[in-house]
Length: 265
DNA sequence: CTATTTGTTTATCC
DNA sequence: AGGATAAACAAATA
Image (cartoon, rainbow, N blue to C red; front, side, top):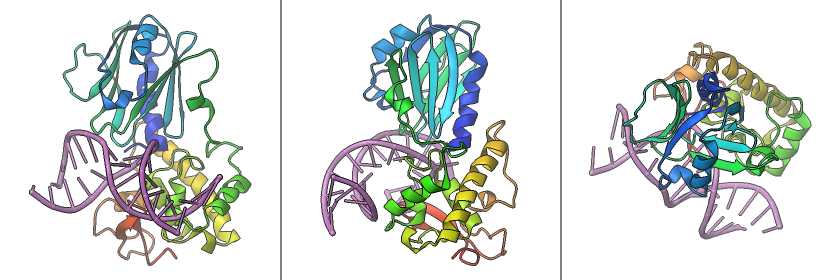
């Protein structure tokens, strides 16, 4: 589920516990979400440490505790971070619980376990947080930067390129379809077949959809207006909000894509 | 029972 | 070497 704005929403669920100390950590290190992570260090370091920072970068979340503890959370396909006042959890998919002083419990759940928990104890920024590409809504995400990436992916279908996190951090399946629909570019189009005008338009729509998604979804998981593709894309039989003609749903690059043949070319 | 899923990593082919 | 593509991961839901 989670793309840029949804990840921000879930990050916000833990924020009210900032400045509180972790009382007890509950986890099951055998769960797949901890693959490659030193869970013993995670538990030892976090218990008693103060929750001091919460941030997102694309689909990656970073939570800091004490002086040197960095907890990374990636939600994968079905992950969620939630906050609850309840003590015990019997949910078999709650893989990590931080019981805080003050009564909140910060929970990471993920049924499908495509998500991932990272943990690093370091006085400098860990690689998994430092080595990320420019965020789309920052000045560093320039047209020239995006265009150079497109030139490296000439033979790919444009839809697949928009899903590449090393250039478009935070964009996921629905955002990619929304961007291409607004840019009037069909998702199968090869990058090499796009001209400069189309690329400039695409750049503007990439930034626009990110800003719109953040504004509407991040604060309280609001529902986008019907003027977006969003509300029409999820099941067969939807109609294009621009032309009123049928939308098409098909696999492109292994992902279900929704587009409007009467609007996009 | 089968098909589907808002993501990433790995393997394989070119 | 590096890009393009498909499969794998796993469980809920329809």
